[in-house]
Length: 236
Image (cartoon, rainbow, N blue to C red; front, top):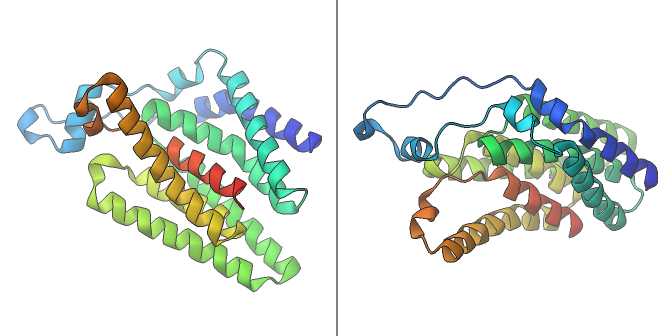
């Protein structure tokens, strides 16, 4: 357990450097006339410009907070899953999820240059596990869980694009793969918990600030998806 926590903490210390290395997205180009705005564009106009990745990486004590969060999450995961090989894979994924949560919370972006390679690495490890153990059932379940999660979130994105970005769809595939590898119960709890946490956050914010218009704002969904996935893993 100690080497795993030390390695995860060390990787999480590199979160600011990882964010700084991300290619900056092109500047948002919104219509000059408010009449031409979509619902999402009106939200973005009201909230002002996004922070750059460089600004996010420069946040005070980001490395320490990222490392502390990753170690605590990995400690809980290690205690729940034990010393099996999948524990190491999930635990080493946590610093990546911390990076994604921080970036999405501050910029409302989930960089594909992080999500897609992480998904590819997990698929490769899953195939390696199958080559060693020949557990076809686990392989099929994980891949189906990934595809179903991505499809569900694609439908949500297609129906309500003002409240969800396509980065959330990609992240759903990544999380669906991890949760599906552990079982259908963690998969269901992990995905549903993310939606529930997001709803609770919005309602609580509205009640505390007594402002219903807050429910119409665009909030980053990725951190809640990641938190829900952690709850699903702990339920495995």
